[in-house]
Length: 100
Image 1 (tube, one colour):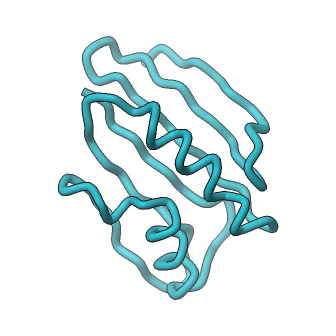
Image 2 (cartoon, one colour; image 1 turned 120 degrees about the horizontal axis):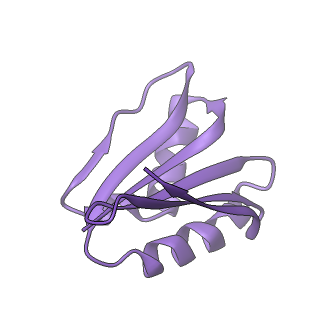
């Protein structure tokens, strides 16, 4: 299984958090955690078998938020290896592998 967490680097207004959540398509998954609120960063976590299409979707959707940077952490729960991506304006700024 994969646990995927997407978060904004900066604090976002609640309305923008909801817009980001839907632009990234996170509401389509039955197993997700997302609690919008003012004065905090966007953060949502989903659990699924394969993460590639979600990573691609988030990367592409960041073009709708050109002034924002997002971090996506893809944790393989079986091997405890995670990959962390930094996205901005549809581009991967950084990709790191971590052993937990």
